[in-house]
Length: 496
Image (cartoon, rainbow, N blue to C red; front, side):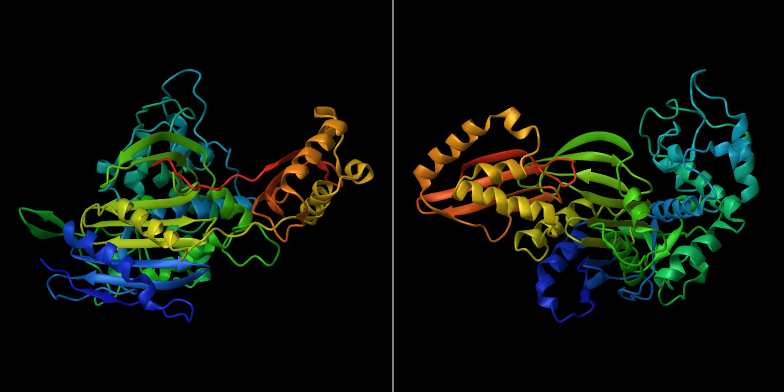
């Protein structure tokens, strides 16, 4: 079946719709090949939704097309909203991440732990899927609408452990249901009300909800499964005590604001706090707290791809051969599959929704990022050097151009000439200069790893010289590590 495509993107002067024709084709081809009735996607760059697209139907009966305001269920992507709520309560001093969970959920006090040396489950364990509960995705799919009393009864009945708490990653919807209860009990208001008041409304996410019945009928995406060569509609469970692990519904326009909030925390900077929680807490949510096993996959062209990472707080963190820092979460329920993924170092994110069971967007989103990076529609944000690093660059460059003992003594940390004597360093630079000729001072860095570490190139008469330095933890910071060598041709390779 052919799926019609519609482009529904925001327009910015810098980003013409034609810039993303290849992106639209990637999503359209994926939807057609994987029996996705309707899909919507968006590209977030530097805090703005710069493009959005849609294909197919949000409702097969009416043949209504989706757009950037169509509301899809995003399933487990809800977990990050739950985690953000917990960190907001932590920031307010109302709980500690290392508190035992039973402090707020007394039903857990009677849990039978797997070993006598097992620690009590903490809030941190729950946030990072390390509480020791078994993976429960098939079971969890049907728990959205359970009542508070039913959840209490389940908790009092006990929970089997697959691991002792704190030793392994294992994905647990049950754990995030418990976190939703903690949010309600600590804040004094129901989980859904807390999230709406403290995250959704401050971000302007007015179409986002935990209750499908509250979405206007002409904006709701219906969910389907592909079975017996036909689409069959899935019922949408109402919000209940399980909603904190997977009940959220939202649109591309709304979720782009949420993704932008996470990206706004990078890089760390001065200025007013504008997100629902502190930027430092947003960054904390995006750090890996529990490693998961690395995987190796083979792409369509036969290329090997390594993926390594683990779980943060309600988010996944990973690294590939192409991007060293990826933050994401997927969501899957009967009738729906979604993904949000962003690159903090690039200030760029991708969102995609589909209305067929477990729509698997991971590979196509990876292809989208590769396409955007290949022609530099996205590129790494420049790290700002400290004044100390810039001053050290200029001083070390002068040593290469014309050595001066007094200048060397001023910039060197106490270890520098103990690790290799001043005489040897002076002689090595003199020999290098005799080969490359006179050099000119650099205008910029080639690469800045952080505020106190970087490298640059000096242009010389008969070749170039590459210099790299690391500054010491002293005040003022001085050069503790200095590498000076003939510049080699730069080749960019990844591990594919």
